[in-house]
Length: 157
Image (cartoon, rainbow, N blue to C red):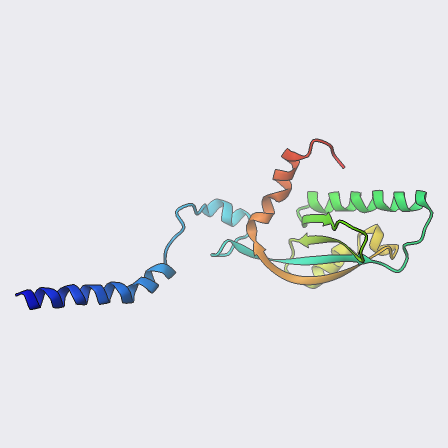
């Protein structure tokens, strides 16, 4: 009887060890929120496809200060419009004075859609900035960043 019990215990242990990887693959996140995942376009991993734009120093940067200031104002207004439309998920400048000036993350599926959006930027039109577009796979939680940011910004840009 002891031998039979030991064999049964070994069999159960082997079974548990072999099924562990299967259980890990099918484990459901207890915090999962289907409505929020759907609203933000998340896949089963909480991720989604975006297009990231790297804003780089363009060839036409030398202009009078008043003109440069107005171009920056129009650039910022375009950023605000794209964010309000839900197309621009994240934007911001890089610190320092290098050739890499900032990033955009667009909520679009294709590079062509992102090109159409970047073409609306006055700084791109003026040649002050150029953009390099790259498909990117990131957290769908980024879709909530602008709403959260609005609760944190004391001063509007």
